[in-house]
Image (cartoon, rainbow, N blue to C red; front, side):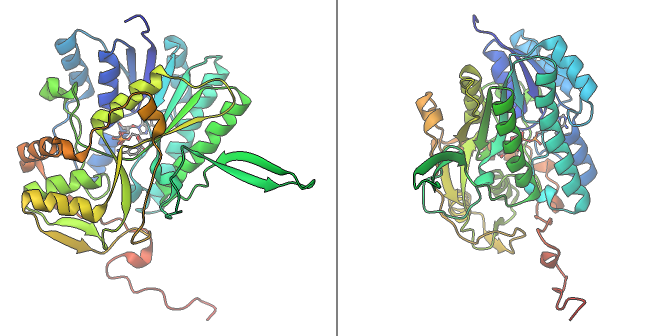
Length: 406
Ligand SMILES: NC(=O)c1ccc[n+]([C@@H]2O[C@H](COP(=O)([O-])OP(=O)(O)OC[C@H]3O[C@@H](n4cnc5c(N)ncnc54)[C@H](O)[C@@H]3O)[C@@H](O)[C@H]2O)c1
């Protein structure tokens, strides 16, 4: 490959980071994964586990070398807390690109209690800022690619197609002229996790303006599926499959619930519309982002990384029709609108050549086959969502009636 880049993949042991690291390595890039394995630790603390058996990082990397002859590096560094080790690595590798997946990414986990809220804020904000500060302090000039979320826009049904990150606003000035500004689309986070992604956006805005860093922020939809072309090569390369109430994403949860004979757990009416993307398209989008760094113009490039929208209830219906599963409407543990519409622009990735994989293309079968293969590993008690957004939503809690003063 003529245009091989040196790439750091922060969070490269995770659901999106691992298949991305493999894909970029397959394309001929020199990939080093940085991960503190905190996701595996959180599973151990919660008594949960990936439905698929994920190999140790050493075994994953050895399997990749056996299958392809390619080497992927690995460094166990906590990017939020071990700044010196991070700087040492960045100086040694002089990355052309830093891809940042390394955050606590479950909204329900971030709402469990004060300890999880504080961890999510400390980990996500410090990690992001350390990576930006180190790039500047060390005089490096990497293209910084971050995984953000569609959730920063909120789900308020604004009656317009959500643009790619910016909203043109027209402000009446003192001299009766109208000034046009492109402002960050007003954030409306629905959890502490989403709030950290909204705060990340301000860090990027500052570093792009002040230090002329080239930054791409990918506002990703909910990822479904498990396997990619690369993770299918060997069972030791298999991707993780989260199904528990905190980390499992909705469509994957439905697909595995159908397989293990659990009713499909729809929150409330299931009228929430969300944006989706298959994991194979995630890795393709990352490769396109790496190949297309933005201009050094002081502005963050924000791309919506999603391919289709669906309501939760329509997904449940689709899975129920093909599998015969029952649907159970359960109390919504979240604090969100019961119903919303969602229209999203994803024109940049389409213009870069992305050919979206949709639900209609048979990959739901593959995900269900994987779920069936590993169904015996399912820990059923981990399926329900038990993290609630407010104390009053906890089962058995009587809502507070009166304030002290009353
Ligand atoms: N999975 C989705 O549906 C989805 C949707 C939208 C956006 N995203 C974003 O994509 C990114 C990756 O998501 P994922 O599903 O792969 O999550 P994941 O939890 O599977 O992976 C994150 C990885 O980062 C590592 N990590 C966390 N904090 C770290 C730290 N301080 N230092 C080093 N490593 C650290 C974890 O150990 C884990 O391996 C996240 O930022 C997430 O917000 C994911």
